[in-house]
Amino acid sequence: MATYSTNEFRSGLKILLDGDPCVILENEFVKPGKGQAFNRVRIRNLKTGRVNERTFKSNESVEGADVVDTDMQYLYYDGEFWHFMVPDTFEQHAADAKVVEEAKDWLKEQDLCQVTLWNGQPLLVSPPNFVELKIVETDPGVRGDTATGGQKPAKLETGAVVRVPLFIEQGEVIRVDTRSGAYVSRVK
Amino acid sequence: MRTFFAARGLLEVETPQLSAAAATDVHLESLAARAPGGHVAGWLHTSPEFPMKRMLAAGAGDIWQLARVFRGGERGRRHNPEFSLLEWYRHGWDTARLMKEVEELLRALAAELAPERPAPGETERLSYREAFLRYAGFDPFVASAAEIVAVLDANGVSFPENLAADRDAALDLALSMLVEPTFDTARPTFLVDFPATHAALARIRPGDPPVAERFELFFGGMELANGFHELADPREQAARFRADLAARRARGLEEPPVDARFLAALEHGLADCAGVAVGFDRVLMCLCGATHIDEVLAFPWSRA
Image 1: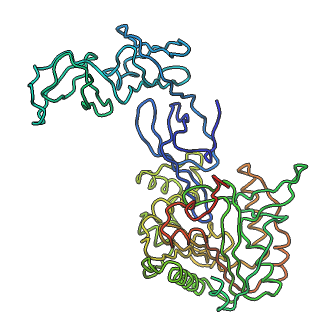
Image 2 (image 1 turned 30 degrees about the vertical axis):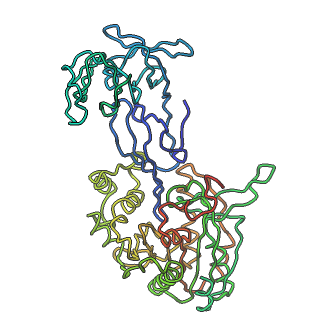
Image 3 (image 1 turned 180 degrees about the horizontal axis):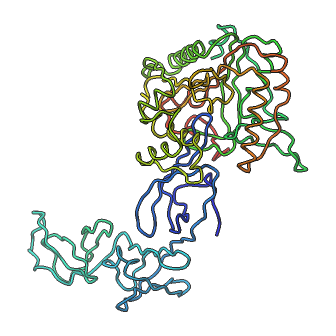
């Protein structure tokens, strides 16, 4: 794997730190007048999601992490693993519960999502920013009530529960923002 | 600026950008210019200091220069590998008098170029030791490397493990991360009396502890200038060069040729003088409120 010198550091670069893949969020070059130069870096550990600060001696080299984001189609869940496929190559990957943690409530079969691979293994699955899902369970709609702004819980086909306006009926398809879990609109 | 120096009787000079010798400072990366065959044809200067001091030794009066200089690997919000350094020398002056003049230049430039911005506030001066005691909570002349690293850690600043025993590097990081950010950005702040290990090309004033007669100016959240009561002793200068080269060898860094002509000039005799180098691009940043050096460069390194 390639190594990167601190002067190649930039946000988005993936490096290996203490054995974990990390992404650089911010990089600042710090050098007092006549002294040692440093790179102050904010990094996110891609395995734990934790954000840390780290200081490097400038010109130091760090091993790169073989991390790539790939669009894949979600195929099915077999009770233990979630299976994904690269549409162009039909290459398949299986991810466990930890990897799909953030995405699993939004995954509908056939939908495309982003799978982050580290050394060819799924590290993280991110759902699309917006998904369209069918409501499988909610209280009956209140006809005509489009103005009061009242909300009720609705269970979606993937198992996620979101708050929806009162006029929404069971069986309708709605658009949801997966980053906030918020209802966006009805899909006709 | 030309008016400022002309009115004060300083002569504007030019010295080579490409030299046979280079700076030995461990923390300066001189860039080599290579001829088609691959051999080093010369070194791009990191500052015009050595040739300007040769002029002084040869009998020039007070001189100044605005030079384009080059420092490899220096790139960031406040760094561009090629930048403008304003440097001048005063015969018979000490650092106190020169600091006053640096301040006058800063105020003159602010009044002339940025009259719409608030004028720099009242100048503050504090010693390296006071600054650390006040803002970092330890004595920079006494604390061990491990103690400094512990203070950094406690403030959420990690220190590279591979530098753990490097006390000077720990001081450098503490200055940048703990001390400097506390300076009032609206007031010029002079930091004076550096530890002898941070003397660079400054004289050391004997005492307990001995201190380097060196100053730095901070303003607008940046270090703008570095000045010395210039070291004129050729033996001590040669010893510092040798120590630099030994430190470079220990770190596996390139060992550029030492400037023998500069040493010869000191041998001939450099009169008592003080000199200062000002990061001119950073002065411009302060005067137009820029937060990145790229804003004051037509073609920064990313597009050079």
